Length: 297
Image (cartoon, rainbow, N blue to C red; front, side, top):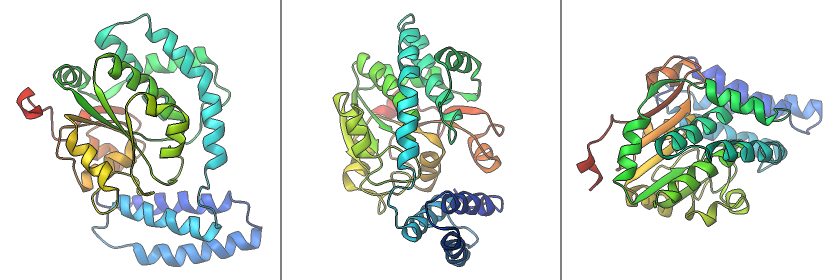
């Protein structure tokens, strides 16, 4: 996605807050912010990609902090806090069947996304179920997605953040139950609070399908920035399911060759405009419009 004027301070603020939240002494934080500000200013150019801008800025923050994974503790706590909520969602889903169950589980993963960059910490299971019921899609093509799943044999699923990923695990279990072969793509190296290949492996994703590393910390799967294996996985699948804003933005930069279904919450106006919804709304839609069944073959 091309950078919009409002993207510039948004990305900068996120990166500055990462420095402010670090364990560096106060004077070192100020020095790091000065160096980062100088670096960031040189990245800005009309027509720049938001994905590349945010990625290069985060790489610089990691360098300045001397920390390859600044979100490590946050991710671990999000994971622990999500576990009891996941089991509650699993029990609720078992009372449903077919499309209703898949829709409920995808809504659960969206509800978890609404809790990012906060987290499920302190949330009771019953409260999450209520949030799931209140999720509304400003753009909803889940019914067409389900029909195409029934005509598919292989799905590539691109994971997003760590706490939310445990709810993606439930979606993947349902896709496996439908008889689909799964290619599950996770970040090769830490990017913000996204789940990495090693974290996904430890969480059991490898039991549901072929777990694929993106090979880098780039926030998406794009040729030249990601591993050949991850790029091939997108081409090998009948359908691609993309979770979250960063993956959506990267696929606008370089769309996969196969029909791609995006599930996200539009947390800012530029993403909302790109997704065709209002800021704050959820969206579940095909990047290039719903394909016909023949597009799968």
